[in-house]
Image 1 (cartoon, rainbow, N blue to C red):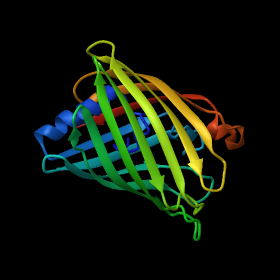
Image 2: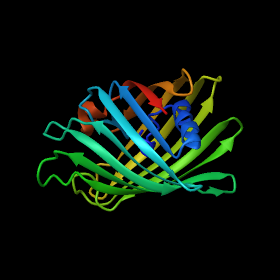
Image 3: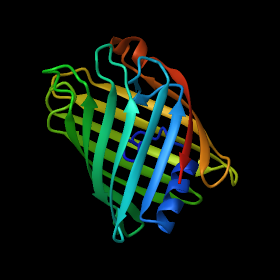
Image 4: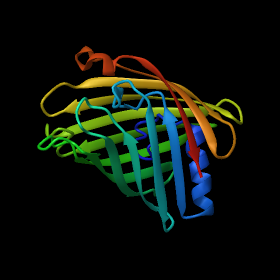
Length: 228
């Protein structure tokens, strides 16, 4: 994903593991990809159009990391791209693989006074459940996209291998805003690892909020990612 917008779980588990493997061989890893849509927490960020994205990650010591990730967006104005900057740590707490991070979302050519740029702080963790993994995450922004005030996003997710090259994963999330407009989102998908570098994810996203319009309706998204 964005590495941290997992929340997002739009990337197949197998693709993510490919990126981890690359990072173990070198402190620097890269990812590039294309998708039929850029869906963030159930909502299209490209007005239901295609996405091109890429990022670079730096491993810092035994459990630190930092990175940057970028994608095209379409908000119906002059905004051309989203660029995310992030850093965090990944301690192991007993059986829990934890991740504590800070993310800054910046928008290129955003209209003056739009207040699109914002910070978010995240805490997440996963635990093994046989061959599968179960996780949970919480994200907090003191001033969310558009300057609308506090926002929280809560998520539970799970992923499991089906074969050496196939995996299934899904997530259930709740986006809450200080001024109302809260909604629930979910996704479920199948990941295919063609090799250690390239993977395909087929994922269905949906929300329960009709007020979001077409960009919040159910959709199937295909994404192809290379991590090296």
